Structures are given as C-alpha cells and as structure tokens.
Image (cartoon, rainbow, N blue to C red; front, side):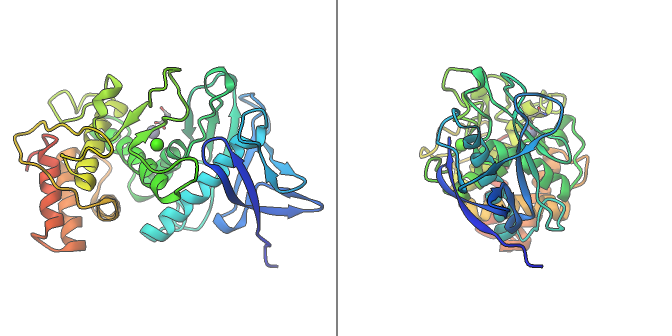
Length: 328
Ligand code: ASN
Ligand code: ZN
Ligand code: CA
C-alpha cells in the first residue's frame, strides 16, 4: 500500500510558519513523516523515563508559535528533522544517517529545566531549556545532534582528543549548513549555534564557527593544548577552518575571523563547495583516530578529487588550515 503523505502546517517557535509532513490516522493526524524516512516526533511530557507519546492532532495545524502549546516545539523538531534529511539527501546524496533511508525519532519536552539535547545512537532528545520556555529544538541544534548520526555513518570517530573534536566540529558544521539550507521564515542561516535557545539566559549563543573561543573555552586555532582538550573544546579548530574555507578570514558578514598563523588573507570558496569537501574528506578518507593534521591531508585530497589538483579550491583548503595553525 502506498503511504499517504499529508502536508500539515506547523506554527513553530523558532522556524515560524512551516509545512510539515504528517500521516492521517482515523479522523486525526500523527507526527509521522513518511516522506523523510518515517521521522516521528513525540512528547516526553517533561519526564525522563516512560513512553514518549506520539503527537496527534485533529486539524493538522500544529502549535501556536509559543511554548503554551506543546506542539509548537514539536513543529520545530519535525520540520528540522525533515530539512536535515533533505540536506543530506539532495546536497550529499546520502539517504538517512545509515544510508538506508531510515529516519529518526525526536523526543521533545524531555525532563524539567533540561538545558541540553543529545543523540544516543538511536534517537534524538531535547530538553525545554531554562524555565522550560526555551526548548532546544532549533534547526542548528537538531541538525548538530542528528549530524552526529550522519558523521557516525561516514566514519566512526573516536570520541576523545582531536578525533572527538573533529566529530563535534562536524556536528556544528552540519548544524549551520542545514540552517542555511532550511531557509525557515523565522530562522535564516547563520554561523551561530543555539542562539535561539538562550541556554545562558543572557541571549548569548552557545557557539559560533567564526571565532569559537568567544564561548570562553574553545580553541579557535590549533596549539599543543588542542590534542588533550575535550571534544567540545578542540572542536573549535575544525569549525574555524570550515568558516575560513567557506567565507574567508576577512569575512565580516557573519562575524570576526581572526588569524592565528602568519598567513595572508584567505578568500572563501563558498558554502556549497566547502560542505562537499568536508563531507568527502569524512566519507572517503577519514579514519577513526583522525587528527587535525590528518584532516588537512584528507580535505586536500577531497578538494583535488572534486575541483582538481592545484585548483583555487584546493589552495584555499591549504590556506584555511594554515590560518588555524594546522600546518602542512
Ligand atoms: N549536546 C551535546 C552534544 O551533542 C550533548 C553532549 O554533550 N553529549 O555535543
Ligand atoms: Zn555534539
Ligand atoms: Ca543558528
């Protein structure tokens, strides 16, 4: 039997008014998306255990843009999981994180005042943030978490030292790239991560790609302190490399990008090429113990494959790494 996909309307907190795919069931609709691998979105009811209750709705109109309606955060998650699925399918040719077309379950409203989100190898989980009024269901956060699943599907990076940092950097790269790709009316693309969820209560994002050290701990450039640093800290080097490659070291449109090396200005090659180089480096070349020096080699090889040896793209990869102190 053919599964009938119906377009519902989401009134999402962050993404704004969006179309989401749902499934009719009797006289109602379920938050199951047959067009994107069967993604489903369910309610943890502010508990940490017990069943996650699938969202069901009578008129296929989900949420009211605020946390007063439990379906609003669900609409954000359901939309973002579909856009992440489409991003990898249409930009990178990968069908689901396992490559088999399978989607993901997003569990929202997890715990109380839970200010985090995570991927556990099977599903995604999102807290409601400070005061339970800042759900961590924005596109960049969801795509970061689901991005862990995609990165894992390409290369099983060891979650410590530099390989763990490359894993975390990769998730922020996917987070930002999916946010641009999704082009949600309420949440256009940027290089900030998690700015909507206000996890500190100060309006500060919890990260960015142009100067990761602005979070107070991340390394924007490689140093001898980078290999022993925890993954979320060493990740800064990879994020900053990617920003340099896509936008350049002189880019001011998205934020300040400092140089750490003695290299001349890097002129970015654009997101569309940068994301393909990163993906191919992970997919074709990376091994589980990859270091940043290795990633330099892998991305140079990927750029040569895609754009030619000694192409502008390959030379920019070189310069973008040198600018974060990852020398050849
Ligand atoms: N949100 C975090 C991450 O995906 C969760 C964690 O620290 N494991 O990096
Ligand atoms: Zn992560
Ligand atoms: Ca963002």
